[in-house]
Length: 209
Image (cartoon, rainbow, N blue to C red; front, side):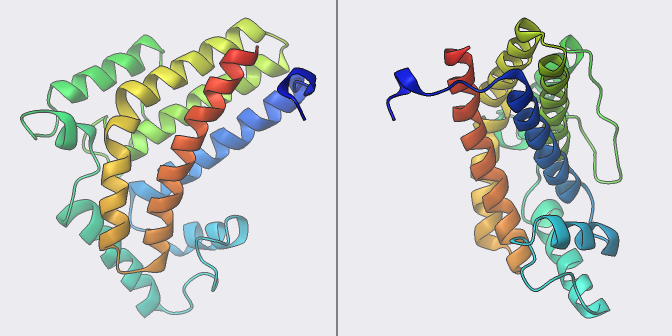
């Protein structure tokens, strides 16, 4: 069908889409923050079965293999921090980190933290921030506040362009190649492809509305 005659989604549908996006970003943030536990893996197996097609780990050895893979990927082989990949110093808590925290602060947001969070440009924090923006967008659509919703979409586009998509695709491509478990290979691929697709989706919404 020609785009000229395609029905544009209404506020209710756009709110549902934003809610789905915030839930996905939040799940991805949780999966990258700390070594997996049985509760998280059971949730992922039930709600995102492509990550664990055989179901959650059935014994301690399988769970331990996932935890070892997490440590190797996110602590030994590489560090999931923006500054580690884009700052010329290569150090954590560098100027690149400051630019990320400045963006958060300008939006009135602060990461909740967690055991694996050393700096505010951690992959988990950046994904959680995108979830925050999608949640605010959802609430705006529900309130029939299109300008506010567009503002959140524009902020998400900026953050993706200026921060997450500058380094995360490279990091997750490396993680996908080095992962020893299918779970972390699929998580890396999904995280990368979803953010890239979301950027296209956001651009389409901003052009249409």
